[in-house]
Length: 479
Image (cartoon, rainbow, N blue to C red; front, side, top):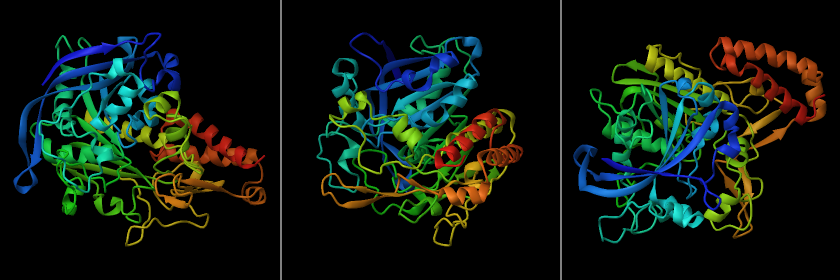
């Protein structure tokens, strides 16, 4: 139960870690950003009979972090709150769904809530600003040594911190945000719908949460958007449990009491690199207990330039938090700059219509894959099928979802299966394919309107889509 909340204000000596204000032109949208520490009690669960959760420790006290991005003018509020399970894999907070969706969320007057999801990021936050974040605490109620399991300590955090607080936090957030409690920062705001979303490892949180904690007759969230799902990162109920030997059933979504949309890139849709994406996806369904849609993003990869490097930027905040002196990690890191946010906008629109108006989304063509889950390519080396844009229909490069980088310790080349790259076509090839930039613009414009009619691009993104595709062609050398 959430029992208290404290707002953190920016001062000359203290500020919001990796603030969105300096990244997203929030003033242009009439939005503001707020930050809170909230405290409460939560049960720590363990896997019991038939895989169901049972209480291991009851009513443990915690303090966690919450970020809010919301309209300044309450009249602009849509009634929707989108809660992101903030990604913890890099050992600092990264709100990747926000980075892909902020344009849509702010255009439509939605409120964003980011919830810090694992105690392994506390060290970085406290290093960044010990006074501001010093109270963050998910204390380990057990004094047992952590066993040598297949869950890396880098992801579980210090021995004195427990990972399992997240489940009751997620269960209680929707009711709290809809309540008239004095502690609720949205008290007086007409919250109608609360959605849950997450990226990468956080996708596995959604799968575990929906499977183990949500029920058809009593589900906390109105809908779910699960994105960039690295299915091999099965989320355990507490830090002592192992994912070794877990049945394949636990890696996939097995029920959906409220509508779920899964949105993946080329990096996560395959089994090729052991990520379990191909075998974990499900057929689209409109059954009452399993309302589900799956969408692939052709051309996209897990870590791309615009949301991994350009947005997070590995700026001074991250450098301080991670005790770094340099900038971006590795060479050849994140060379794929395919813009995925157009697909995120479509997924959000579809989810809202499904939940709020009962309009089930169409089933989109999935990427073509071999029997063992490898993505099949066309003559240009790009994916066949999937959710598309003119950038893959009229390509100026080959979009690749993996890359080679140099290991900073050994100096040897290694494969990065999440950070992709682009291989540009030659100027001669571009000229042969498209003639000149004006003709390319005509092709892209026609294709954009076709994709809008097919529900693969939003009409409100039309101009942005055309200019993005034409700009990429110009960058590649077409004139």
